Image 1 (tube, rainbow, N blue to C red):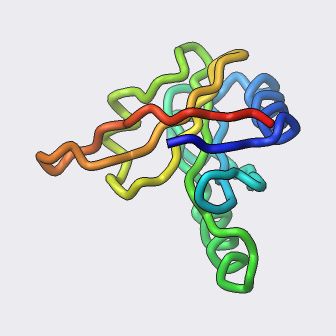
Image 2 (image 1 turned 180 degrees about the vertical axis):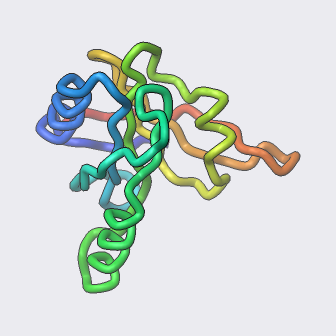
Length: 133
């Protein structure tokens, strides 16, 4: 699977991540095969330095906007400030096997993943190609 994102959007996500020592997060909006916009969200996790949890208000607002004709939610992004841009065990434990996109940034590295079922009721992340236009 290949997904396109503009250089501007990717730079924006990386700038948000670079400006905060905690994990940052937000929503990816668009359509199949392309990320058209982002919706930054507050990280409301009890320990935002090690985990992320999207602010439910941001998620609800994005769903309402999509129902009103806006871009649908196709996934989310988050950062790994002291790690690598691969899903962690915590990411897998919190993910749903719903085909959503997971864009993870760590420093200047950004990698895209798709949350899928592992056949045993859990989640595995399949790598996806992130095309920067």
